[in-house]
Image (cartoon, rainbow, N blue to C red; front, side, top):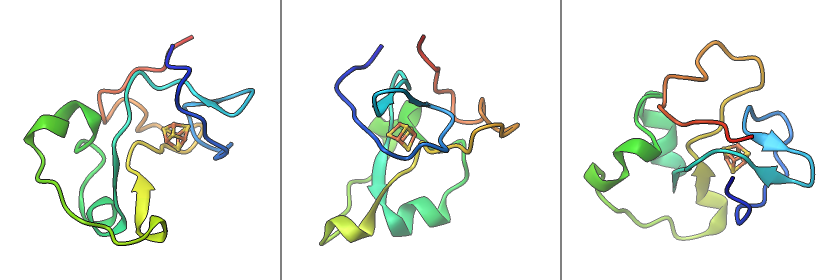
Length: 82
Ligand code: SF4
């Protein structure tokens, strides 16, 4: 379990008690990238992606967010750790 990523987005599939992210990996991206790419483009493809500038924290997002209960939880090839 990755205990180094803290997150307060409680409606995410990967969120857990103590405000911990239980995804085995995540992708942080610019809002522009996050809004334009499908769910399958995520952390597992990170080495193939082109880095880009955000400017402020307001323009970044967690691309790996999946709403709790979503039927797309496996679309990004990210695993939920116990
Ligand atoms: S995948 Fe992103 S939004 Fe979801 S719990 Fe982890 S850090 Fe938070």
